Structures are given as structure tokens and as C-alpha cells.
Length: 296
Ligand SMILES: NC(=O)c1ccc[n+]([C@@H]2O[C@H](COP(=O)([O-])OP(=O)(O)OC[C@H]3O[C@@H](n4cnc5c(N)ncnc54)[C@H](OP(=O)(O)O)[C@@H]3O)[C@@H](O)[C@H]2O)c1
Image (tube, rainbow, N blue to C red; front, side, top):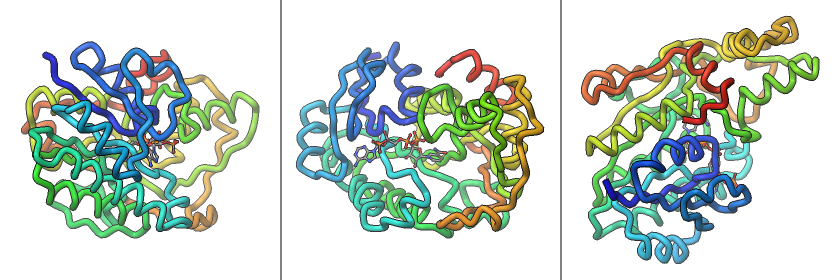
């Protein structure tokens, strides 16, 4: 199987798991805004700012991918609220640049999106639920989805939620919880935001199968347990044998984040399980894999 796969945002939390999962099966070109970590170097790596149309055209047209896995995004939800122009430039314009660059070729695009396209009033959400984002990050991801749907190339939009993995990303919730508790620091975690957290290793496996099976269309993927962030933190403490009493409940209102958050969110996975045969995993199993350092 000699498919050529170009990944954007490859050094992020999800990108690392995808490289680990796909590396044995495909020719990969990893790209990211800035590459600092040489663990990515098992495959060719190129710096590419998706906000720069000319750079995108040059890199993508030179590599001629069969599949473009598009992960690059500004993922800091409050950051997107603070700097809307930058969020739009990267998340929406960047996606347009990539679509322009593959337009006219047979390349397929796999775009990873988010449950934040929904308002979180009555989740978990199926693929036919009507999006209604309540923060700017969600708006940009929905606009990018629409660009992908309207493009000339065949596409998969894969929505997921609350990613966690073995990587050292500063955005890693598992890392924040374990490091705080190991240092004996008390942490406050919201108990009113619900979702089905998703191990990046399981998501990478799902993406591999969608590529191998030439699947097309909109899919939701997440873990099989629907829990609050507070319950998630308690579960992490349990699996890592850390002191649960350091984890305090807090409400979203008390946390006073800049961007609104969907409260009853999460994604149902019946479509991807029933029509593509992709399985989902429980939180205990996934957290044990993360603890063992299994990336994918
Ligand atoms: N994390 C979640 O819980 C979650 C949930 C649902 C969906 N998603 C989606 O899943 C995808 C991957 O998420 P993730 O958690 O792996 O995110 P991440 O760790 O923040 O990785 C995103 C990567 O994109 C890069 N990037 C930012 N601006 C760029 C630009 N202009 N050009 C090229 N690369 C750029 C980032 O580089 P810097 O680090 O240097 O900025 C980072 O390496 C994203 O599309 C996100 O929207 C994530």
C-alpha cells in the first residue's frame, strides 16, 4: 500500500498518534508550523504555515498526496475568542488554501473537526444534528467543514471531542492532572461539562480504517464513556494511583472562561461503528494504554 499521505499539524497531540499508526503502512509527509521535536523524523518533515497560500501550494503540489489529513488549527478555545482574525485565518483560510492546493487532483481530504460545532444543550450529538456553535473556535471549525464539503475533492469530516493521549503536549489534560497530583497540588475541575473523551490512539486507528476503506462523508468518533471533566480527572487519578482528594469540583460559571463552552456535549458513534465497522473503547482501557506510553 503506497499511498502518499500529507499531514498538517502533525506535531500536535493527535498528529503524533496518527504518525505512529500510519507510518508502517503509508508514505507520510509530516508538516507543521514549527517543527522542534525530532521524534517526528521517522518520516520526512516540512515546516508549512497553512495561513500562507503560496507556501501551501508549493509544499502540497510538490508532494502530490493521495490523502491530506488536515489537523492544523488554532485549538486554544479562549485564544480563538481573543484573536478572532487569527483564528479565522488559520482555521478557515488555512483550510481554503489546502483545498485550493489539492483542487484538480484526485487527493482526498480527511478533516478533523469538533463537537464544539454544537451548542451543548442536548448532546451527545449524532451526525444529523444541526450545528449551532456558541464560541468562535466552533464557528471557525464549522466554517472550515463547509469549505471541505463545498470543495472539489472527495472528503471525510471526522468530528471528535476532548482528546487525550500519551504525548507531552502542553494542552494534554492527562499530563496536567497527573503532574499536578504528583506534586501534591490541588486542582479544580468542572463537573458540569459532559463529553465522551477520546484517546488519540483510538482515533488514529479510526482514521487509518477510514483511509483504507476509502470511506466518505461525515462521521462522529469518541470514547464509549460519557462523563464530566471532574469524573475524567478522578478516573485519571485512579488509573495512575494518585490522590483523588486533591481534585475539587468547580462549576463552569465559577471558572469564568472567556469563551462559552458546550455543557451537555459529546458525540454518538453508531454511524461509524455500524457502517464502517470501527470500534470505540472505554476510558479505563484507554487510560491504561496512555499510562503504558502507548501512543497509538
Ligand atoms: N484537542 C481536542 O480536544 C480536540 C477535540 C476535537 C477536535 N479537535 C481537532 O483535532 C485537530 C487536532 O487537535 P490537537 O489536539 O492535536 O491540536 P494541537 O495539539 O493544538 O495541534 C494542532 C497543530 O496545528 C499547528 N498549527 C497551528 N497554526 C498553524 C498554522 N498556521 N500552520 C500550520 N500548523 C499550525 C499547531 O502548532 P503550534 O502548537 O505551534 O500552534 C499544532 O502543532 C484540530 O483540528 C482540532 O480542531 C481537537
